[in-house]
Structures are given as structure tokens and as C-alpha cells.
Image 1 (cartoon, rainbow, N blue to C red):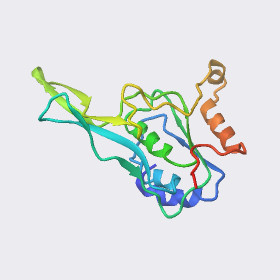
Image 2 (cartoon, one colour; image 1 turned 90 degrees about the horizontal axis):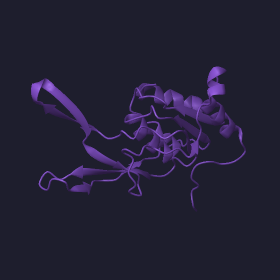
Image 3 (spheres, helix red, strand yellow; image 1 turned 30 degrees about the vertical axis):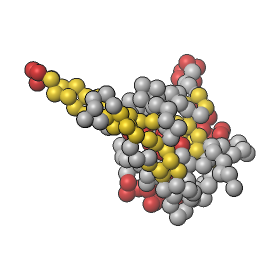
Length: 189
């Protein structure tokens, strides 16, 4: 999926019963805002960042909060995002953005806990290493780094399902969409 696909996807999805978004990977395109805004009808806070203070090493301060802005055509049906321990970095950030939607559930297993931008440290001998240069937190201040994005519903592949070639997360997502209950957050009047 690319940014250019989003307008057409919105048209195709508008009359569906539900959407399954598979982010059990490293996402190929940056979709938190372009697709995430399709899943919310209100400006919704989804992430807080902390940045180091270069004047006081070891001090970290919260920066500006980020919200998902709504788009004119809101998708009011169920959205289920699939994730697992392979989901990391941009996929984790995407899951956080999608979770801001009113009818979104995240299912699977806890992600890698490796989100945030990457800062390179050059070492002697031509070596280098990389670290996350900022802290990434839920809107309530809870950490995501080293913790991962915890699913709303934990679903793991079973040995039996693997042997049978089944995708049990996808099966659960379809089951959720077909249930006659609302999922995700509810908007208070």
C-alpha cells in the first residue's frame, strides 16, 4: 500500500462491513495520518514524545502531543489491525495511530517495543550503532519502548493452525467483524 492508494481505498472501503489491516511487518509506507484519519471522527490524541535536553544530560521533557485529525468521510464500521512480535518501529507507531479510531481493535501479540526515530552513534574503527533518539509514550504517559504495543485481544498462532496452513489472527479478525457488537472506544455524548 502506498500513500497514492489511500483515496481509492477509502472509496472501496466506505460500504464494507469491516476492514482488516495487517501490520505484522515493517510497514512499507507511512500511513498513521493518511489512513488513521479515516478511522476517527474527532481529533484524537494518540502519542506523546520525550526528547533529551542537551543542556542537562539525562533530562527528558515531553514535547508537543500528536493527534489524529478526522477526515470528512469517517469510516464508522469495525477495523481490526493485526500485529505480532515482528511488528516494530513504524508498524508500532501506525498501530498507536489506528487505535485512536472509535471502532478499532488491535489483535495479535505484543510488538517488539522498538519504536521512535533512530539516532546513529559512530564508533572508532568505522563501526556504528543506533538507538532510539526520542521516547514514545501513550497519551496517558505509559511507555511503549521496550514494552511494545499490547493488543486489545491476544491471539497467537497455534501449532495445529500452522500445520493446517491457517492464519488464526485473520480468522479472529473476520469473526470480530462478523459479530454484532461494537468494538474499540465509544464516543461519549
